[in-house]
Amino acid sequence: MVTLANKLSTRDYFALAFGTMIGSGWLIVMDDWLGRGGPVGAMLAFGIGGVLLLPVGWVYGKWVERLPDASGEAAYTAQVFPQFVSYVTGWVMLLAYFIVCPWEAVAIGRLAAYLYPALDRMPLYNVAAHPVFLPRLVLGVAMTLALAFLNYRGIRASATFQRWITTIVLLLFVGIVLTSAVRGTPANFFPVFPRAPLLSIFLTLQIVPYFMTGFESVPKAAEEAAPGFGGRRFFKAIVMALFVGAGFYVLCIGAVAFATPWQGLLEQKFATAVAFEKALGARWPVRIIFAMAFLGLTQCFNGNFVASTRLLFSYGRRGTVPRLFGAIHPKFQTPHIAIIATAAMTLVGLLLGDSLLVPVTEVGSMASAFGWLAACISFFLVEKNVRARLISLAGAVVAFLLLAMKLFPGLPGHFSQPEWIALGVWLFLGMALHFIARMKG
Image (cartoon, rainbow, N blue to C red; front, side, top):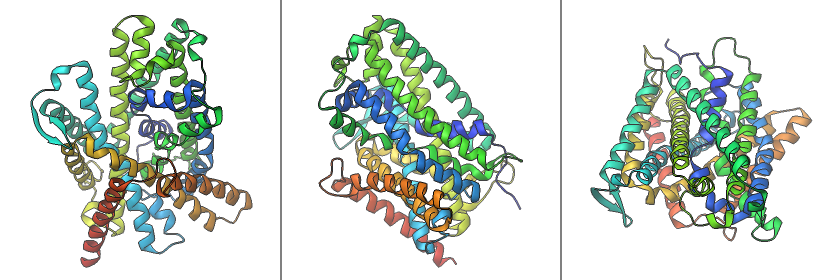
């Protein structure tokens, strides 16, 4: 019987989790972060967010040690809930990873067009009054097919690619921080908050979970661990990703605000690049930062692609979607049908353009919190140790509050009609596939 290849090490799992977490938000929406919390408020919010997610990360570490199953949340909830509840949980969690793929494919074209405006030519059609340009579309298609081919050929190639990109991103990041330390000044930090301190922190804390999603991608590749891989190493990779990811965001915000007066960056497109262009009085830092952002997008795309394909594969293997998706390539030992299907759906999303993907991305943030909540509640119900149950309860409370911010009317950032429609369409697709699988027995 053909199984998934056993190739991954602790460093591979860290690169997967960190890469899934760190994309290009630190470049694209830095102005929004500073506008919400100011430099100190935003830094504190990301630091606090990383700490608050530690109980959730702890639960995932314990779950994957106990049950190394690629279906992740679906497998965890199946221990205590009916199969249908397990499937819905897993299907919603799949959305959290999958929707990042077309978004990254679109964003790569947007970043490239900033450096090379010639890419914004030859409009093909409009989506919600936003043109879709042929060169940017071709770039997104090429990136999608390249990553699909890489993953089709084997997890070892994908993991090595992910690890090298993560290393380069971290090295470039160290260079950015050091440059800010040399050329910046503490005076640029003031005022440290744009409004009352607690409100500044809270407004930024609302968006932190979205940018910290990814640490829980480790269990999705748990079945591909190298022989002799200890279960506690999964936990180590998850905690490392949480700490390094939160530290990355905190130091990045600090470096940008230290380099140039932060209030001059508000409503600036790609504020991080603008900050260093002003600080150094040259254009070359922009190209370096965009190269880092391009690598960040690529690692985020690849990480979410790996997680998406493994989830879809595991559902096919469990028979909750057509079993075709559970096939494994006899030579490459990869879930090749799930990889092809995920790439195809990514290309469809790419054709829609970024304007329609925004509300769906918001649904992805909700989906992550929903999956975290399900994992924590399930662990609380199966675990007998009092200390472990208290930690899982803390994680459940954090996840519930994050979920409530999206679903409860009246709270800032709650779902609007487009988000509810997007969620409904995704659930309908999931129910259709589940019905087909049941009809085929």
